[in-house]
Length: 477
Ligand code: 6PG
Image (cartoon, rainbow, N blue to C red; front, top):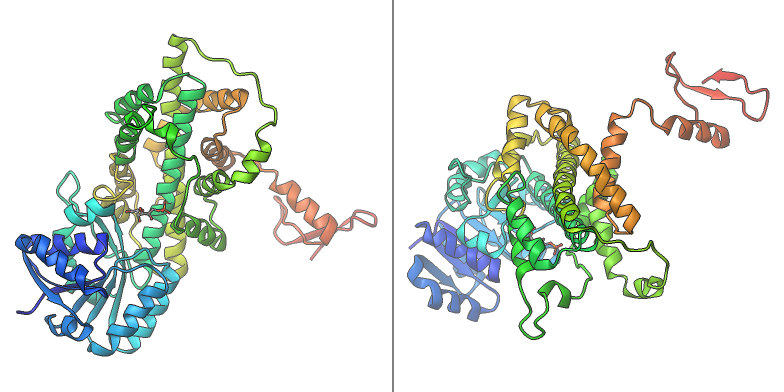
């Protein structure tokens, strides 16, 4: 038997992905460093389809039809390089190594280049949707060569999630590291979405005085409207869950220090390099990092805040509606920033990424899947060269309608001392972009004053310097 695809690395993601291929009728070679894992996969799930269990790298490679398609599902970083070093010598020109981990796109670019010299296609592929997605259909973001996608595409389309209109949630994102780059920004947006939802929850709790169970119900209602999304749905589940041991809301027994594996942080680091303002995503990363500084938080607990004042029942309901507006408007801003970063990456690395296609494949399978992505797709369909999502008419109108409530929510948050860095950063971004004049002019003046860094004028071309230490006349540089 020859397998059409092979999966090495059978931790939960690899295991579920292998099962997904098998359930879709493909013969799947499976391999893992610890052989017992390979065996247990075939023992437990062998009935789901055709698996070929390989004990060694040689057996694994020999089991694959040519050109070989070899999916690597190991930890990003060194383990990925180790697997490549193990398998590449056994492969032939035309074979494909598909890295389905959360690799840094710069590593992917390096690996792609090195393997290309040996005639091997390296396909860095973002896969989103967690364990369930891997098994039932993830959103898949492959980079790598066009040629490799011709061979892989049909298989990926088969195992991917399908959007509501039936379209498979996979597309050839672009060459070399484009897939992993887009997956990275997906995760950055995921962080921002989660932070905004967290702020909404905190406001509903501390300002409106709702219980976690009541907030779960509010989220369930929101989930029937324009905020309809996987993250809102699971938020309601988490909030309504009661801890069995203590009888308390689950959310009250979890240590409030958020962890991260790094993709959100990369999104911000790369955005800084590319010069793209992703303040909403950055605030989400910083909020997680702040939460983890236990000693700092302990030392600050006695600091004074405003006097708390709870809202009455009818005010609370009206406030909840406002929070929905603030959340939605902030979400538009996060996606605007994320897509700006993708556009900038595409430009920098010559990837020619189709932003509409990216929003289309995020409609199903992935963590940020949401009805909202359909609107983004529609915006790019209507105007493929859209400079910013905020310049889309629909989004601009929706924000215009939401802005009074958005501002009110931030006033309430500030007055009551509830930290809302995500909402605030989003509004500041919006206000800065629409401002006719920014204090950047003053910044330029200061720079020119202390460092003769020069400035440009609104009324004439060229660069200028004022002789600040002298007679303050202007010289042109
Ligand atoms: C996905 C998720 C997945 C993973 C995150 C979690 O798209 O399926 O984004 O990749 O759950 O990396 O990230 P943190 O551990 O950094 O929160």
